[in-house]
Image (cartoon, rainbow, N blue to C red; front, side, top):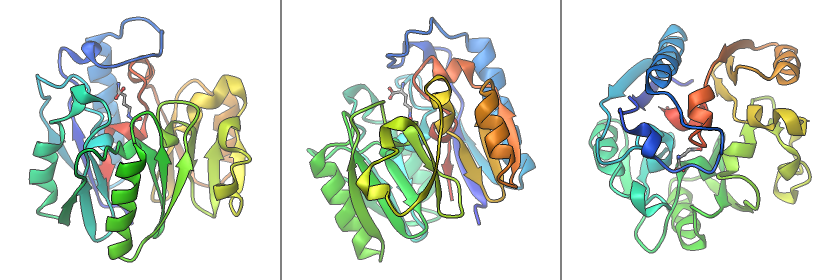
Length: 252
Ligand code: CIR
């Protein structure tokens, strides 16, 4: 049961963050509205939300998911893969130490939390342009010490593993074509999205509710058939910065 979330407000300079999306410059007023709606939706599902202030020096810092991994009994503070994001993790560590034992990734290992998919006590760690093999190795070793099983998965498409594949309960993965036949995921049932709707693979399960990005009608109707409550949220400005629903919170 998820009871807590940590979020961070997007700062006025959030549009200076990293992006490859090519969808135009995002609007600050609009992302603030979208972020507020996101936080509000988490609270409406009963979560206690710890809302952090923007970090002026780190325009991508509202993507809090990348700077830490929160497992049931440990939080692992990462070294983000992008040099411009290294330093976001400090203020998260201060919060998380009240809730979990803290472990840390050590350089030259790098890990972005967006590459870490948790399914019960199994973790899939994407090795990507951001999470290197050494980071994945260290994270695997730490999580194994806490009784978790880890499997690495090559991310050859998209920014992070969870840009393309997310767990939605009942042994089911919501995925794009990129991971449909990945051998590491062979024992899961899969819902594979069409190319046009692949962005909706970054949907987020919060207990008995699925948060889905707005604007993907086929994904929406498929997910409504799962029996979960489904909530659509507009994240158009977040998408322009290569982010999505899971990236904007740490959930535990
Ligand atoms: C970045 O490139 O690092 C940010 N602009 C986007 C990070 C998105 N995070 C995520 O998918 N977990």
